[in-house]
Image (cartoon, rainbow, N blue to C red):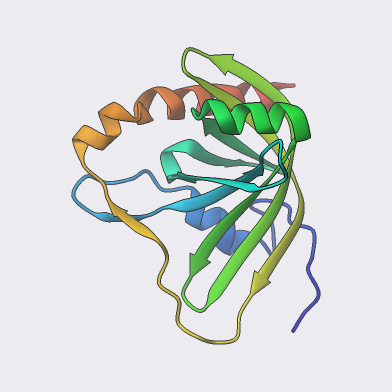
Length: 160
């Protein structure tokens, strides 16, 4: 099995993960739910599920929108998280370091450096965790607002 490698989102070697994170969730379709893991004050994992409306590859960074107050507190304290994704026969594990946080009403946009990435496969077909996307979920989770904030953050960072 190959050694873990550092991921540069959207560049060679990481294209599969970047492609999983880019599409917009479509109503009335099964969409992948991506476990996003932080660590609480007692040292236990805290898991939340994100969708592609809340994740945006941006060159060598991953932009993430997080609404959970617990996860935001964990991230403010540790500055680290892990993102998990599945694709065909491969699992992707990406260790993230928060480089900047932009607060919004009810959520934060994080600029994360991918400090470690591993594509792990034994050739066994995987089924990613999924949910059925609906317009009601999109409205409740404020997907349009979070994605607009992530796109604006990406566009500002490419101008610098």
